[in-house]
Amino acid sequence: MNQNLKTAGRVLVTLSLVVCALFVGRELWNHYMNDPWTRDARVRADIVAVAPDVSGLVSEVLVKDNDIVKKGDVLFKVDEKRFQIAEEQAEAAVAGAKATLDQATRDRKRREQLGGVISQQQKEEAQAAEAQAQASFLQASANLDLARLNRERSQVRAPVNGTISNLSLRPGNYVTTGSAEIALVDTDSLRVEGYFEETKLSRIHIGDPVRVKLMGRPGTIEGHVDSIAAGIEDRERTAGSGLLANINPTFTWVRLAQRIPVRIALNDLPENTQLVAGMTATVAVTP
Image (cartoon, rainbow, N blue to C red; front, side, top):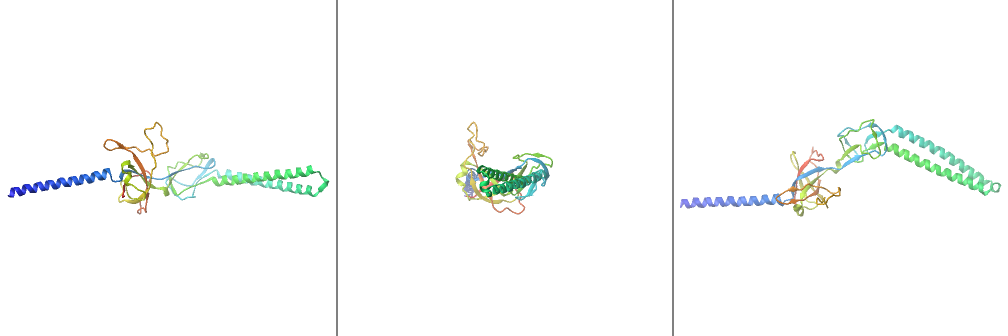
């Protein structure tokens, strides 16, 4: 009798272990294959390529590498003295054009007052001279506005709040219009982009809460799903557009599941949390 009880006990224990193993295996399978989470996530930010709107020698660099700047802060100056002189020349040209216009206006009025003493042709010539003087004055005024704009643009300012990165610009460098000279990481655009397998997209919706775990950092950051990419690069085509996200698929079982970018907006960051564009993160979505 005792022997039968022991045998039955061993059978029950074995069955319990098997049931537990099946349950744990099922949950692990569901977690790894179906739950919307990924280790393939990155901290991202928009990188602003700061370029001058005028060409010239850099006279002063007012920032250092990794400096935090605010929108509107002056980053560097381009040959400000030259643009100051150009503005003064434009002001002198405006003054000369204004004097010529005033004289032409007086001449036209005098000829009109003479009435029939002078011919109609002389009156028309006076009117034409005044019109030409008016046009010259308007051109000089436009040149002055341009000179002032160029002088203002000679001070290159930060277009967004951010952090200077990889700075190599030095006083004395020659810069040209439209040539990027400073990389500015837009800190207001910091977010996390998770690359989820396409098989998990059906369980991800805009607004779903998200837990973000940065690699090597304690604790988690709360966020929510902001948007889901509408397209990725087609690897079967001979040449891609170069504009859509191009994500390397990861081998899982037999077939490669495409990775779809999901943009995660971060909620209030914990105190002393430092986000660096390019950091690796694990993202778990709570449907």
